[in-house]
Amino acid sequence: MMDRRSFFARLVAAAGGAALAWLALPGKAWAKKMAFGLDKAEALKKVGGQALIKLKDKEILFVRDGEASVRALDPLCPHEKCKVTYDDASKKVVCPCHKSSFELATGKVLSGPSPRGLTTYPAELSGEKVIVSLE
Ligand code: FES
Image 1 (cartoon, rainbow, N blue to C red):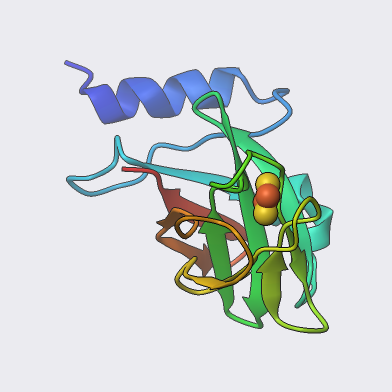
Image 2: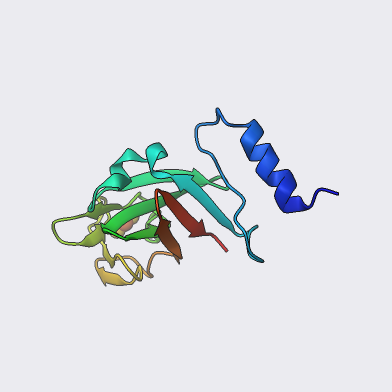
């Protein structure tokens, strides 16, 4: 009998032409984690790069902040919902609308009118894959 993980792995294999190949991951929390290859987000191949990736019907901002590390954040500024970007020169996440800035690692507000920080998600690099947990 095929378990859920095997079924999902076969489903992903069958959808090989999809723009992003989402993979079931081993372990108990497999349903909460998703992965995509760096070939689907070229900007994340170099340190300082960033990419907006849509997961579970919401966009996530990924930032490659080290040779072996990547960060994931909600890109919507809590102030008035403008999309933030990463500024590699200052190493901060910044909002273009009213200049709020946020700490990359924690999403904490550093300056500006944002009433709270950005939501962050656990993310990691595993070889050529980015793995993120959205729950
Ligand atoms: S919308 Fe981001 S600071 Fe106002």
